Length: 292
Image (cartoon, rainbow, N blue to C red; front, side):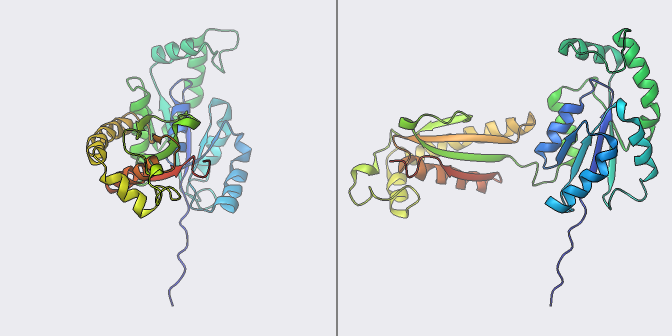
């Protein structure tokens, strides 16, 4: 009799660093990688959050906590408990930093005061923050200098360290729809299948939809169907590589026909199948089925 596998504890990542160094960008990337992310959490609640996630999502769910200079007491607790971990979870402390001139430009661009600035200048706040955070930086498991990194380069660094192979795959949604009901507002690409003959006018096919083998075969046999696929998939592949390079892991493709029942459904299923064959995490969704 086989034993039931015991889920391994997920990682607890604590993201901190200088104000303006990219904590929000790192948090968004960790969320895209599947982490349960909590921003600006009071330090005293970290263990409670871990306990709640353990109970609701399981111990394998990775967690990221984003905190700043105002939470200094937590770093002492994290350092003291590093050997014991946090509720059995391996903890990683990430420190983001950048040069003062870059931090000043970033803060001025968003027109926000530094949390330690008080009535002084922005550079005074930065100086106080560096002094407070010096020991934290020394304890960090991973220090990332974002001085010369743009948003996409920072997300790539986070993904390289914390992303699993599954999490780093492009997640594609292929939505079939009817033009008479409107184009999906979240579609990154839109394909129009109204150039193909409509199975609606074939009496034996009319009651069925594009998921039916007879309807799908009819659509794919039409002149231009295969040529469309052979030309469209390489375009989507180019875009997919670009999305991943830019740190974007979600793509939505709309495939439309008149009513969203036959041609768009059959073609969406085929596009999704081919994208899965190319290694992308792809699902087909049929928005307008049943509306006719």
